[in-house]
Image (cartoon, rainbow, N blue to C red; front, side):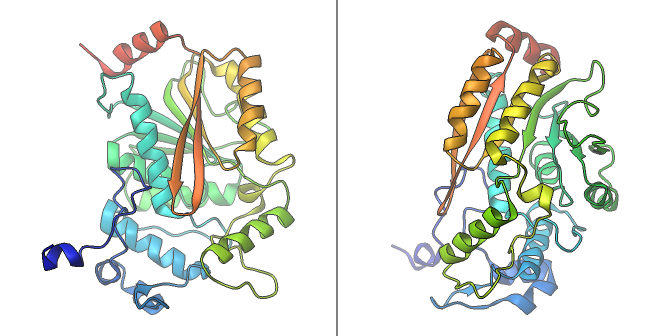
Length: 321
């Protein structure tokens, strides 16, 4: 093996093949992209450069560097206390969603004029940023939080992406699509990163497990190291109820959205989701497995369009000859 091959960092093979974050973080290059990251970079117990992933400011600084270096997003920030997403995992969702659309397009990922609805875009606006930069997709991002809407809009405006990303306020916390999807409006895809927990206590317990997996001992009350407001982290009934209600509402928009999708953190949530999908007579549904390191996740996908309707959709929307 050549010295250059030996020096090459090992790939994170669990990430999607097109994910730009399969290699170990190059902190020297990332610190050049975002000089503020240097403050947080140190040597871990294995002798490698790293950051303290339990420190929200360190994670946010890393995110800024990744967005500048890989996606040419020159402004990105979030208000204190809001969810600071792990970008490699978010990118994975976008890439697997692209594969889903490619199944309707002779294996070719469609780009413009693909339109995506991000239900719960959050203050970080991360999915529209990655989806637009990777595939030139247009997005509508919705959120019930005015603070999240304001933050996402500033990110869009400061990066001059107004022609590609629109942020809409969801006035009703009980709804997902109603009040957001306009009459006759079409989306090729909807995405969602639901609140996984049923309570703050459960969210805190999840953070303790996360810190343990990172090899960090929690002291007293752990900081939610990726941040998160209540609506981002937990809801009554947890993930199972959230997904069930989303599925029920989606049937009223069966002709507006080609494929509905959502992240699913807990495998036990799938059984109840499948039951709801059978009840609403979804034409097709499937689960896409994902893995980022020790974290196992999956994407639940469903459509109310028959195979013939899906073919017609792709021809009309993406101009297949």
